[in-house]
Image (cartoon, rainbow, N blue to C red):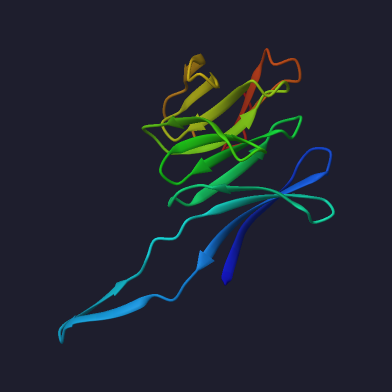
Length: 171
């Protein structure tokens, strides 16, 4: 069973490690006629594994067939946000239960938790900064427009969101 490790992430107190793993299987070559060939293959699931520092597997999160682009631990390390290629963000706990899923109309550039782990902040390609609770309620909805937002983080008290743009501007 061959796999490709696509990401690795420590939690804040360095007790847990998350890895994003994609299985690799051979691609079948189908020749449909002499003028063209078509490569076909099975679309494979990404899996996020959560390990403790000793190497014990704690959780295996099956993230469907879309590529995992980014992962983020909550401050207490009990939740994991998973940003997918299909513009969805999922929140999982370490008991392998998906707690929430958010679908966006634009590509998500960044996702992170607030300090108590009860809210997420997202930054999207269309210049939106949004914070969410796990019931799907939008708590903050700002539109910066054509700005090249890359990252967003909550302040330690959770009352302020700081963003960083590609051109080095912090807001």
